[in-house]
Each structure stands twice: as C-alpha cells, then as structure tokens.
Image (cartoon, rainbow, N blue to C red; front, top):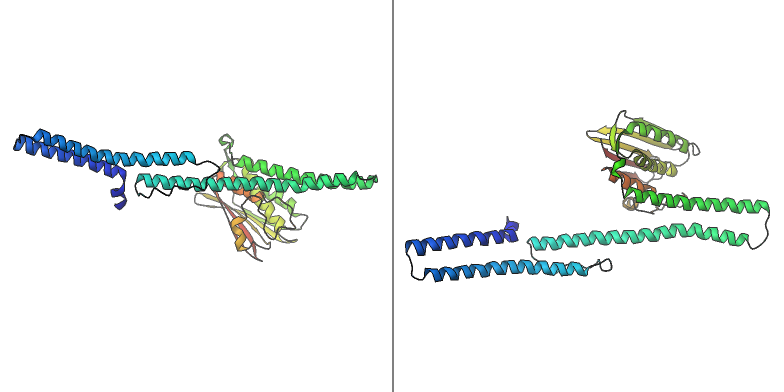
Length: 331
C-alpha cells in the first residue's frame, strides 16, 4: 500500500480525481447555490492552480525520463560498469532506473564471460599449435630416419586431434546457445538412455569399470534427441574418466510426477566443495583434472543443452565418496 501511494500512476490519478471533485463542488456551491458574482473568476483561478500542480507533476515525470534517456544513450560496451545512481525515487521512474541497472549488471557479466571465453579458446588452441610448430621446426633441422619421421607424424596427429576436439566442442556449445525449435520432437528418453548405456559399456572396457543401470521404460519427452543424447553422454563420459580402474558407474532413469530424472553416479575421487559452483563454467578444469585429457567444455555443453530443454542439472559430491549428477527434464 505504501508503494502504491508513491507511484506516479496514483499521484496522477489522485490529482485528476481531486481536480474533478474540487471543481464540481465549487461549481455547485458558488454558482448554483450561492450564485456568487465573481464565481467565474474564482473558478478560473482554481483551474489555473490545478493546472500548475498537474504541470509540475508531469514536468518532474518527463524530466526524470529525459535524464534516464540521456544516461542510457551514453552507456556502451566500453562503460558497462556505469550505473544510474542519481534517481532515488521509489516510483515507476525509480523502478525503471533499478531495472536498467540490473540489465547493465547482466550485460556486463555476459561481456566479461565472452571476453574470458575468447581468451580461453585462444589459450586452448595456442598450446597444441605451438607444439606442432616446434615439432616441425625441430624435424627440419636435420635428416632423420623413417621411424623418427613416423613418430613425429603420430605426435602431430595427436596434437591436431586435440585442436579438432576443442573446435568441435566450441561449435557444439555455440549450437546449444542458438537452438533450432524446428528440431524438437517427442521421443522416448528410455530408449535413448539404453543406447547411451551401451556406449558407456564400451568406453568403460579399457578401465574395467562396471556399468550398472536401471531405466524406467516408456518415458517420453519433447526436445532434440541427438543434442540431449550428447549432453547426457558428456556427463557419463565425465564419470568414466574420473572413476579409477575397476570402479563403478551407475546410470538410472526415473520419473517423479511430471519430471524425468537421469542419475549418473560414479565412485571417483569426488569434487571439492569450493569447485562445485565452477564445474559448469567453460574451460574450467578442477584440481584433480591434470592427468585427464579434455578442454573443460563437456559439462558446460551439457548444462546449456539441458537448460534449453527447460531442464535443470544438479550435482552432489563428497571427497573420496564419488559424485552424483541429477538431470531433471520435463516429461
């Protein structure tokens, strides 16, 4: 109620109603009842008085809007840290200023993320490219045997594989952030999880990791089957990577009310509490990832894809006890 009294809408409405009531009361009282000789002059003065009050209200209103407009025009991508602090009112103008400041906060964070993203991409590509160049330069310094050339070529292929994988992940991340609504369809998530379990079993063979699963049948959802499959496979692949040899990864599909729930549980080393909030950031690699190959984009792609499907991803982890990922999708 207090906020209502401070709003411009209420002030203008109150002024309008008060003007009508006051003018009507004066006309009835002085002209029709008492019939004052100078009632016309007095009525003119009252109208002028009410007009001045209305003008002041509207002037202050438009003055604040003009100030906001000028301030907005001055802000660009180079000074997104600027904020509108001079508007202190608690009416609609003040609310507009606060909303605009909130927009600047979000834009500033987005620009910082993009700058960081570009820097991270450059860093991820720079290392393998530098390694390739160095290998070629060293190779050309003297004649070598065929076996030496083969070894250098194999190393170069491995480095180009890293570059290719990084670029592929960057493109996939870009695609997830620009979804094509025409690709959405109703599909059976249960069948998709069964296919992913088969892939997981093949990925786990080398490390002798046991893949157990429990999949509730006939769970249908709407979305892009291929992209969602890749997103969930990124989570499964992550679990296999960080689970030690002869460990265990569990994949479950459940349903609760109007949500499908994918659960991926591993017996890996776990994630430190301070790192949990960062694991979905682009190119983020935790303290236990130094010996694991990857660019740090898998979980970022997974989260972006799941968000596009109006879902949510959560993680629970304890050091030495493994990690559990929960994917909630509307069904």
